[in-house]
Image (cartoon, rainbow, N blue to C red; front, side, top):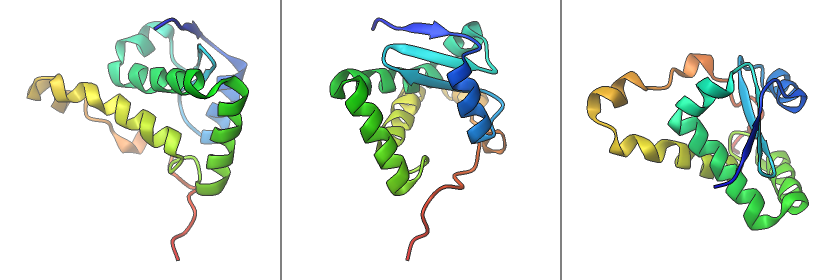
Length: 125
């Protein structure tokens, strides 16, 4: 898949502030924008890379402006964490773990304390 990576992106910096996260990767079209993480470290993380590549595929499938609209509308409707495009990307990011040996899988476990909380999810009635 053809893609470009931009380090210290102002777009990703804004997303990082909104999400209150130490580091962020975000996709616009075929470009992965990074803030708080180097390209080298980002590319080493197979799950994170797979997550962002899924977003590139979503842009390709729906078109640039249409996907932006669909993504923003979905986020407004159900929140960032429950956004179906984010759910799809999280699943893509976890698929690579099935092929890892159990020792590597255990050392690659995500620590949720470093992740932003889904504070924008709508309450269930």
